[in-house]
Length: 325
Image (cartoon, rainbow, N blue to C red; front, top):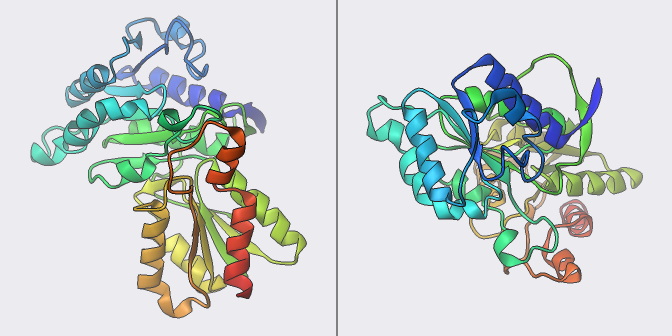
């Protein structure tokens, strides 16, 4: 199996789907002539031409709405936001048009499209360019929200998202585009709404998604050296949430820790904790612990960034709480 970068896996997914279906096209800022702000769309303009790989002005509200109209008329747009921080300019189109059109039209107008781009902290970009909005979009009926953690998942989930008949929010990370992982040569799709058990264990369940899986893996390796077998679950998607996989794991391990980059109030971690205590309370041997970013805008200074974001040390402390206190 090949080892390729996260960005290459995404580019392959889009190119394969555009070859398969002439209704698929890519639109966004710098996706064409510049080959993508993060080089995800490298070479796509040369192959598919300017009618299907379209550079836009800095006008998220405009090109998001254009994409929704195209989807309502039978096309399958991929709308790239340079960062999901900029999607706030277009949130009226995403939430009030894309998410609701199928319902408001009585099923007459499906909106088969993908909004994709990076989310969360990407280094020293300060407060306005470092936010995690997955819980915001997951709160909206009519949207699906996908957050892959590795190149294999990124390709399989993006291909499935492009083929899906609902609008999909596909969230990546600037800090993962260069990550490498094994990706097979042949075509494959991964189901939206299905978590995966990344590592089996018997002592405690650790749940995460997206780039926070790196933090989770680091904590798992430390716990393994201490003789603790952590079962690690990668949610892959946060709407719909695969609570069945999480609950089955907690019924086995009796303990749960959730790691998520977003702020704590109204987080995905809060919903997972609620669902587990509702459906598996009698199996819990310790209170559920969640690790989120601190409840502040992200600072610019790298030392303060480390204090605010979830990390392995905070995760290990939460694991210690559910195991030993």
